[in-house]
Length: 431
Image (cartoon, rainbow, N blue to C red):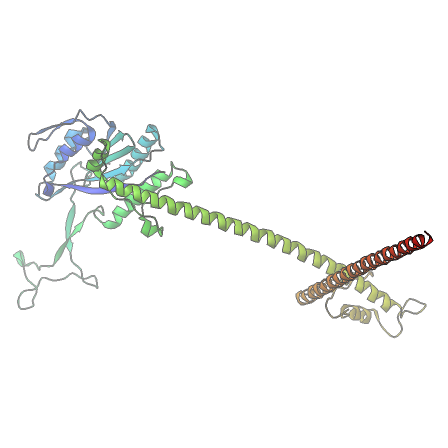
């Protein structure tokens, strides 16, 4: 099952870090930091199988060289607490081949390039730990190929969109050099890369990119279990040290905790699957019962239609009985006869009249159908009770006949015994 991981963090001077050193480690290359003169050599790392620099629009072609790019970044970021780079640490689904993984990571990196960053992409292919490191610049590049500003000063506005004046102790607006009025200013970032909403957008984008290569059952989600409304337990970060202990044959506490969490999640997953199967079975049974009910209603409606048609024919024949020898009713017109047939009701339950004079008027009202179905149900129930009574009576008669037959056999045997006894006594006397 694919695991989602997208960690976004900053690489800054305040932590004593070097962008050149970070890039050399992630690319397993030898790079020199021109600011300090130090040479960083990580060429012995063997798990790096892909490295590439993607340049944004207006970036100088020389920046395609990794050492040149990050030395230029450190040259422009001079503050002691400056943010040198932003890093995306991405877990690659283990279901993907190397070619699929490379395309996945590069497609995601190109979306960052479209936002105005130069990015340094590296894929590490460890056993059961395929992941990628992407380092991105923190400044956009202007049309002239120079680094842009991270933020700019703008006038501070009030709720009405008006500039706010700088006031002195007397409450009057200050006047600067050359008699210019002073207005309050504030710093505004030139891009939204530092906003929390942007981080959420990047994380969601990585999940969407991964899901293009995954089956529906293995889809990943950038949200936590809690935000998804899932009652699974989230695993904790194990780290390099814990995995090293496990690799050497020991038992790391963090790894042991994760194993317990996996067991509990598997149990929850099994229970949820069983509940899903039960719900599907219930739905299937309800569907079967509904189908049977629909078939029964259809039969009843067909029977109702036939019965109504027969009763209408009988009513129509009864009406025709009043016709004189010239086949015309005495004292009535055709319209009156038609109105009478339409208003006719047999048992007060159904209206369905069929005329054989070239026109057919059929109307079945819902209320009448329901009443008729109820009457049919009552008739069926009464017929069933009558059949049951007849069956019970037949059984009683059979039992009575059996008893009478047994009683007759008993009497016959008794008479035979008496006759045999009399003959034996007569024989004894003659002797």
